[in-house]
Image (tube, rainbow, N blue to C red):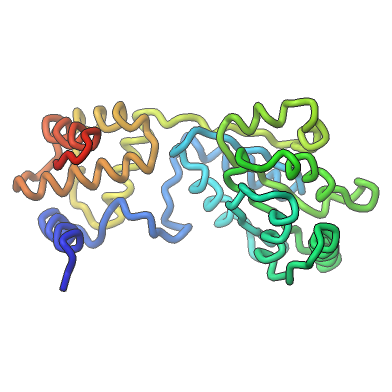
Length: 280
């Protein structure tokens, strides 16, 4: 038996003649939206990894940090690069390196020293194979201080002469502030590429909504201009909020047999979204 959510989704897709849910998260890298305003930022990331540099990337929640990382992954060729993604940053030093071992396909060792040695040996072997590894550490603002203080050691090979690894630290703006502390200066000095993802502007929001609708077969823009402006103001262009609110607005428009989402309907959806137990 189909769930109520599935039936509701099918109803609004049928109403707007859409091929799939437009604001679903499950997208291949090549179909991800990247605003023209952020294309230069991805170019800088790609250049930094090609130059074997270490990277700091920060941004507020929902500005597209993970999408930016996926765009980076899509741009880097498989030959010559090995990307490893880790997002559980709330671990102590030994468990952090054990997690990294598992992500690399290595057997985690018993002691912290053995785990670190296994990772270092793996990185050196990749270097001999002419493969450059990049460790993408998401939610890095949550890293324990003992991990932050030790990460620079992981970047040191052959007396700090060979850049065999790129660290990519990704997190909220407070990560930048933590790295500026004197006790983190060894790591901070090694982060050659330091980037901030700016908040989206209204043109980014419009571009995003249009892209997501077009890729599922929408024949026209399903939000009028006033609704798009309100959508941006209410979500500040944060993608997770955009996806949720836009989906609820389309469902409501379908129930009311409307051809587009207008400002009045979106105001109703936003009020319900902010009300405990509210139903749009």
